[in-house]
Image 1 (cartoon, helix red, strand yellow):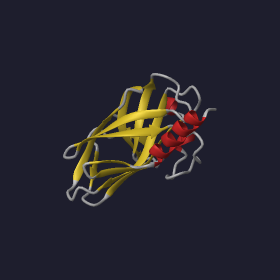
Image 2 (cartoon, rainbow, N blue to C red; image 1 turned 90 degrees about the vertical axis):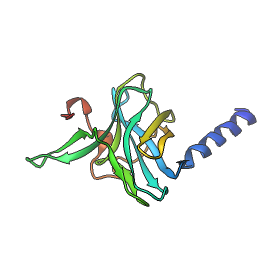
Image 3 (cartoon, one colour; image 1 turned 120 degrees about the horizontal axis):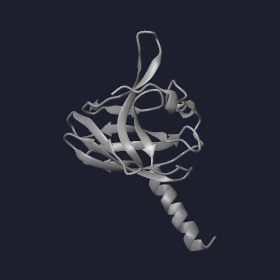
Image 4 (cartoon, rainbow, N blue to C red; image 1 turned 30 degrees about the vertical axis):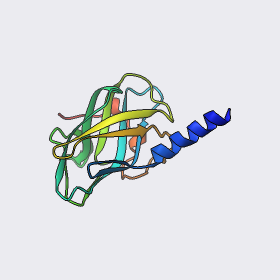
Length: 167
């Protein structure tokens, strides 16, 4: 590997380690996963911090990586079973607060992936806020993260093909 290639790779790695920041909205530690090599779905996780001085609302999310990109969470049903559900109304982002998008909780769901996601790939995601507007985030695919990172459920081992999804 040439010096130029090594330097570019190092600069790219450092840039992904830095938080995304736009108009007072800061995104920390974004990463994405798929449950299996040939999975047709995946998820992205991150911490979204609000430094705007006012409450906001995460109303939606877009990305070209999949046919459908939605905000999801997990909710317990009447039988005590955790189910992943689409949250069409989005998530409130309190003044000086944060949204934790973690395994087993709130997350960005990619359904109908257009191509296989590999470790080290980067997914471009646009978070849509009511007040702050669009926040662009480059989310690295990290298949090496421990399955229990950031949440109660082992999201990386879930079979979304058999999971009931509500709209």
